[in-house]
Image (cartoon, rainbow, N blue to C red; front, top):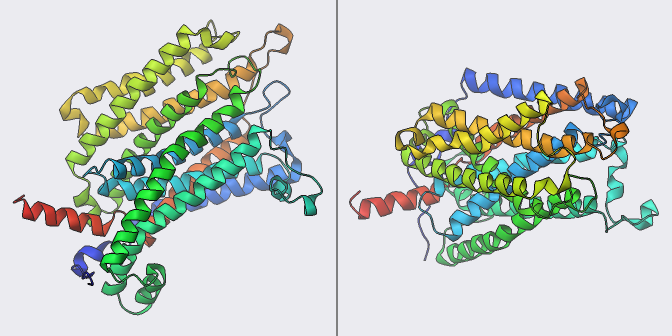
Length: 437
């Protein structure tokens, strides 16, 4: 038996064939130029002059590079987890946001990988982290959490890429059947000979579920490994057993906030397309409830950390330092207080409120990463060792470049692949018609 794969061309190819407007091109080119300047110039300067161009010093040996690595890797881990959990629980509202969350994972992990590669100084020697003793003459220290990062993050990225691509195969077949000429050949290669038979659909569903089952615990374990970079040390403020669930909870919260921003942004840039019709107020309402629940979890984590006296940190509270006070206020306000607006139904579907809360969560999560990495290193049990940290121009350029890289990569993926699963949306529409909706 062969299942027909040809929906109406207006459904399958409208978004892919629609001309790119001036707003889309302006945002894309600005993002690409920002990425080329920020990451390209900073990488060249670090490679040519060394890590001394960064703001790190003898006291704060990890600066914004590690802050941004943890921030982007948290976003990357959340995207696939959201998609996998919604698939395993058979949620009907998964389709409009799953593909966007999966693409967020790929772009965020690429942005995160830039920082540990570049900040070592000798970029051309990064390959020595791979287990190739015959060539390098050494074997990487597998007892180091940094090596766990290399293995865990690379494994997670590969599985996430396969999970994303498997979900796209039926959609590529739909586009192949609706397109002509060069596009037909391109999507024909990507469809891998998909014909929509019953046997192929059964294999597709089994493979999707298998990847979801593997990736769900893998996300928790990988971000726990990232937290081990800190918690296995003896640095006051890092040596805490709460860090694994603390990092995982923060990653999921920031990931869902970024998904909301992506939905609103793509909906605005692709006005009049199927994306705009698929992102309904009901979808925004459910995602807002998700953010609200996760903010309560983070509030409990902050309370737990406070009651545990911050693991013996010499400066558990902001004290007289006004900068620390600002960081703490923004962190708690963005991650806990601001999402409480979503208790009101009218605000859960308001696009401006959602955007404000999502930006507040992302700002709060960035502040949390900065608080963990930099403030713990600035403090010391010896007053003579207490130091300050000031980001350099190179640090800020890398930060801006990573944002531009993420936006440019995401906008390119949106044009190459459908933003949401055409097959799932068509199936949901058929169910709605059968139910009289």
